[in-house]
Amino acid sequence: MSLSGRLVYANADGSTRVSECYSFNVFDQRDGQWKYAAAFLP
Image (cartoon, rainbow, N blue to C red; front, side, top):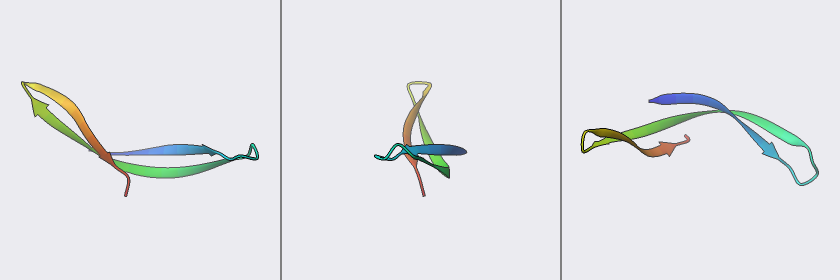
C-alpha cells in the first residue's frame, strides 16, 4: 500500500518547513488478523 502525506518540521528558530512525502506500508497477516509491519520512506 502506498500513501502520500505531508511532514511539518519545526526548526530551532521557530520557523517551520513543509515537505510532501510518499510512504510504502507493509502489512502481515498473522492468526487471521492483519498487522501493521513496517513503513518505508523512499
